Length: 97
Image 1 (tube, rainbow, N blue to C red):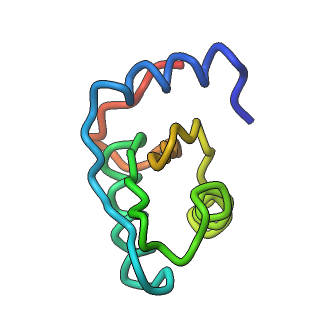
Image 2 (image 1 turned 120 degrees about the horizontal axis):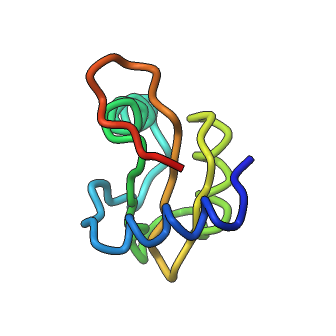
């Protein structure tokens, strides 16, 4: 569980990053989950854009991805979701919290 200070730091780091995934119409597929999982392993912090034609509300999608990816939801601002998960992979630049 992230503290409010950790969440604020991650939110500030994510503000300058572009969204690396866009989720639109259709269900959340296994391939999408694998791609998001690989991105979290490589980056630790990812930003996702939820398109207007998405079947899910941004809050519902954030909770769903949080459960499926075993990640922490940092924030949701409008249609953007920010997720964090500590990476145990060697060679990854870790975010100091």
